[in-house]
Amino acid sequence: MKVLITGGCGFLGSNLAAEALQHQNAEVIVFDNLFRSGSMNNLNWLQSKGSFKYYHSDIRNSNDIEIVIQETKPDVIFHLAGQVAMTTSISNPRLDFEINAQGTFNLLEAVKKHSPESIIVYSSTNKVYGDLEWVEYEETDTRYVATGFPQGFSEEIRLDFRSPYGCSKGCADQYMLDYYRRFGIRTVVFRHSSMFGSRQFSTFDQGWIGWFCSKAIETKQNKLTEPFTISGNGKQVRDVLYVDDMINLYFSCVEHIEQAQGQVFNIGGGADNSLSLLELFTILESELDIQLDFTRIAPRESDQKVFIADISKAKDLIEWEPMIDKRRGLKNMLSWTNENRSILG
Image (cartoon, rainbow, N blue to C red; front, side, top):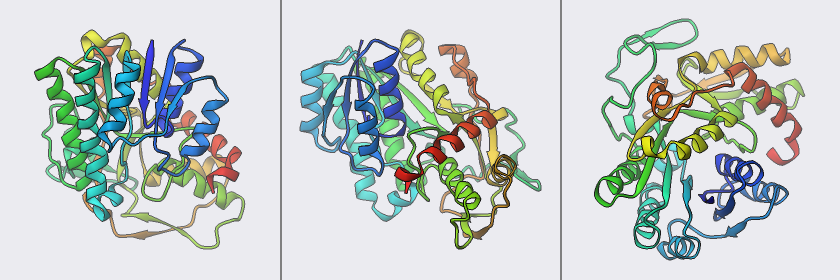
């Protein structure tokens, strides 16, 4: 199997590349412009795992991606190259559009022209559903509860592109589905909730689990000179999925491509692996025997009070479900973060 990973030096991309190299007996092609913080570290780490072809290229450049598709004609493409921060999309919507929407269109056109048998699995987002303010919520001491959706939100809820990020990812999401309908390109769309794990170089505005694990370790080591901040009251909820389960998801999708092609799946840890910020802090305090000190700032624009993915469709069609619970995943994340403090900054 020949596997191309766009954004292959990112968090998920580097983990998928390592799995393909070490356990899938695949020929691996990594496509990344090393724009994001930590990507060079991940490239160096990947080079220790095996031999692969690397393209230092940019998804925004149609010629770049066309050359790669024409030269390699991959069996499988994991399309992960993207601008992933809501805050960046608001401050620089053109950049966000060029990477997410235009870049995805560039890939689809290249595949249609040069490798129409390729499978494309696309990493989309729950933000295509907007802020979900039409949902009724209850507020408890530690979280918001979407009372009408005890098992989470299915793929049937309405699309509502509310931010530049939601628009660009939603545009790409819909192009993926339509290229299956119109041109027979075997595409699959994953609308992700929150994912976390090793090789994730989190920042204040992206990768919240990793970011707060870093803050907890800094607290344990007495390295914080002032409280860190959280957006909103801390009761907003996401279902969290550890990277090992994410790896299994992507390769399970390829194995079940006849059932998955042309489909969209809401993906997360499911209701049993949901966490609010406040609940996360309670776990981190217990694991590290600390007291976290934080201050609240205004909620982020277009933030969802709750997003939990109903993952029943993925269970039914691609025989996948999470195997690592949130507590075990958090322990692993704390361990990796502590071991890699020198490169995390």
